[in-house]
Image (spheres, one colour):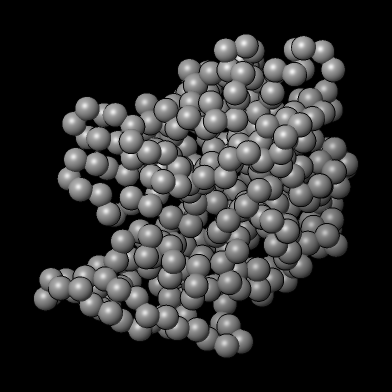
Length: 341
């Protein structure tokens, strides 16, 4: 190992709507933090990034705002995304003044050219030397250990905070690709809307996410669950406690869940017959944080008549895929999106 190798720690990034994960070559996953930035609205100074900033969501005084700079898997606030990336890259790249890292970033497969440019520019300004982009379903497939070079079809569904990516992968390429901007965030919004309409109860993003994780489901559960929640009564204007059931929350989540199911069906309809036979044999592989919604795999099994498997550690698949690309760039550079450095 030469001096260059010591300092050129290449970086893989899953720049997600809900969470950002950063892998450093030779060291593993070094950052797994919420994609949230807290700023002072008067002087635009960044006060906190990641977990610390997320804890401020919905709790900040007037002068402080906790912002999520990513929306639907892409950059909504260019400047804050750059600051967030810079903070995470600095955190893992202690020798930043020596050699700027080569960076591979997972992005939604439905990303536009303008959005690609924004991601590249942000990473370069944050200290990257070269920036390569990889479609999230491709990265997820590699991260799961799928042989993406084989002439067999694999269907991968990657459901994150902002997008659901459905892709059939064969021979280093994405054969069919469906990217919808529905994910964990839309599920949270559906819960907020349901509670507002049904109970005149206002809850924040963090409470909605907690409800989704604890009692949210996409398919009837063997044993239905319930939980107590706190929010603000919109009529009386005072705090209120309420007991809700998993049956109600399943109803609340029906719209985003149905959108994901429909996108999977559309993707299957567009899949060439030879590859469909492979998928029937191998099943559908699911990754991403929102793939862990209770019963989502069962709902997809019922609707598609295919085996559906949520992979182990689904939240880290994309970043592990970027890691594999960095570890064997020669082998995997063909799967990167065109227009890289």
